Every structure is written in C-alpha cells, then in structure tokens.
Image 1 (cartoon, rainbow, N blue to C red):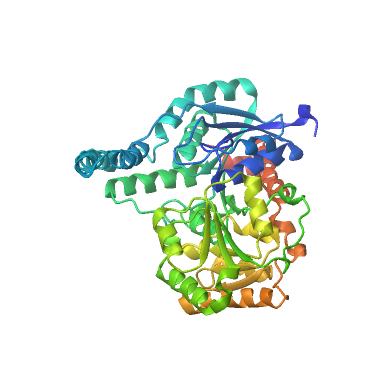
Image 2: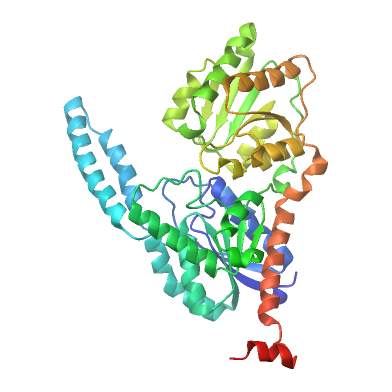
Length: 459
C-alpha cells in the first residue's frame, strides 16, 4: 500500500527483536505484516531485556519502513536477585562459597521484602516512566493515530494507559498471556496482588479493544468487564508461512535414528513426575531399539527439568537457544514433536506458543496436556497427532504408538495443510488491522443528525 495512505500505530513492546525468544514473535510478526494492510508500526521497545536471548536475525524479517526505537531499559530488582545466584557460585573453596551464600541470602531477603511492598507491577516500570515524555513528543509530532501494547510485561500496558489518558488515542491492549488469572501467577505479597488486580482492572476498563489469544482466555478477560463484552476479541498466535518456504525432504524412515524433538522453553513445572515416569516407561519398553531413539531438546531447559529428563534413560541432546530459522529446521527434520502443555489454574485455556509452528512443520505431534484443553482441541481438529493426559501410562502409549508406526515404515501424518490457513500470521494480522480500522472509523464517524437521538445524548 502507498505510504501516503498508511496510518501509524505506536506498538509498545518491551521485548522486541533483536531480543529473541518465543514471546517476541507475536508482536514482531504483526509489525512485519501490518504495512500490507495500511498500518505503519512505530515500535517502542527496550535496548536489552534481562533473561532473554538475542536473535539479530529476527530484525532482518521486518520491512525497512518499520521504525524501531530502543529506549534504555536499565536494571531491575529481579535482575539483581538473579545476579546474586551467580555470585554465590563464583567463590573458590567451600568456605568462601558458604560466606558468599550467606551474604547473598541476606541481600536477597532485603530485596524480596522491599519488592513485596513496592506498588509497581514489574521490573520494567522505570523504563515505562522514562518513556512517557519522549513518547508524548512522538505522538504529537509523528501523526500516530492508535496505540497498541502487549502483555507481558504489565508495564507495557501501564505505559499505554498513561498515553491513553493524556492523548485520548484509541488503544488496543493485547494479552498474549493472562495476568492475575494466569497459571504461573504466584505473587506472595497480598499488597502487590491487590495492586496488580487494580491495575489490571483499569487496563481492561480503559482499553478500547482487548485482545486474547484463545477463546477461553478472552472469556476470562471479558468477565472482568461484563458491561462491555463487545470490545473483547480473540486473535490466536500462529505461524509465518515465509518461515516454511524452504523445501525439506521428509525424514520418513530414511535414517536409523528416530528423532523426537521438543523446541521451546522447558521448566520444572512442565516436567512433573508423570511426564518423567511416562518417558522412562517408554524408554524401558524400547528394549534393543532404545539406541535408535534420540530426544532432542532445543531452547532453554532449566536445571531441574534437564536433570529429570536425563534420568529417564532416553538418549538426549540439549541445545540452548538457537536462531529462529534453526529452530524451525529442527521441527521439520524431526520424526515427531513433543508438545507439553502447562499445568495449574486455567491451564486448559492455554495454547502453547510452539503448537502453531509444530502444525506448520507437518510432523506428528505428541501432546501431553490437560483433558479438554485448548491445545488438545487444536491438535485433534487439525488431525495432527496423538494426545495424552498427564499420566505415565497414556504418555508411554502415545510415544510407543508414534515410534511403532515409524519403525514399520508407516509414520503418522502431521497437520492437514488445508487446516493451516486460519493460523497464518498474515491472516491474523489482517484481523488485527481490521480492529484498528474499526476503531479509527468509529472515532472519525460524523455526529448523528437525528434530532431525537441528539436529545438522548444532550446534557
């Protein structure tokens, strides 16, 4: 579309390329495709994000006209607490490490106590405060017509809320995760829980449109504002067709090893005893075929999860974060893909972010997750693999079935390509642009001229 006809949207995303990780993909792909639908993104992000990897290749995916402003992030309390753990391990000798550990625990206790009494939502609040003044100048001088922010962190929405109050611009608040209703929410401080819920309610009340990533999560968000249900919409995550244009030969039965791959972050919460027991039972049942099975994990796997998986008896390969294109290649070259849904409150509402690229890789998926959850619905509707609850027996049976089919040369199929279109990042961005257009059209609509209607809105 001609630049002269493009409208400008300010996208507030604390994490954005060249920062890597699965969390940046949603907004980065929106920014990539919005110009095709008449919207030019102006991105406001941080110059560095503690705890996330760097992937400069993701920046190459953006059109040249997309403007990215990286504002100084600074350090945060949680970053300092993480650095203390490294300090403990740095000492030489047991006595020095013990002394360092004692000092570190004392400092960490004080930081945790102070954090419990602080009203801000997260470590990014200082970045958000410093961003208000330059963004006000940008909004006033660059012709920005609309605000977009994404959670998490909550400070993205906090910044957008402040800009909304000062400018009156229409605002789309995107929740790629739930906040206080999320299965990971574990805030121990009652004061901070109350502050979080109050801010969350202000965000949901003030945003002109609230976007959820699954139908059930959108329902949970909408329940907080029962008088304005129409402003809540669902736009799922998805896959970028451009990431799958390279032709790869299917690995069906052409090699001696059966490769089961997991691509993404993995923590202790997703590797509970049932999963470990299921993997161990599968390994034990392989007999002489055990050496033919390779479990390849690509992405950050924390120490507890790594130990649990390594103890199952499966032959494992652990690879830390790799560039996105390499992660896609890992999916496409696997014989099967393991998908582990989360556990906890509202976990059935979650669609794991990697499921859409798993679908596009068209390899059979072995889903381990809650019965009747969103992940199960998608895998079943796309006929993309087999599903098992968090029970060792069904997990063993699902893996055995997939391996057995591969062994006899009749591997299970992955997702039917005819079912992929609705999850294309292009089509999902089209839906977001339609939301933007509707907000602008409503703002620009002329005042009604019908006298009776005017009387009803007159003071």
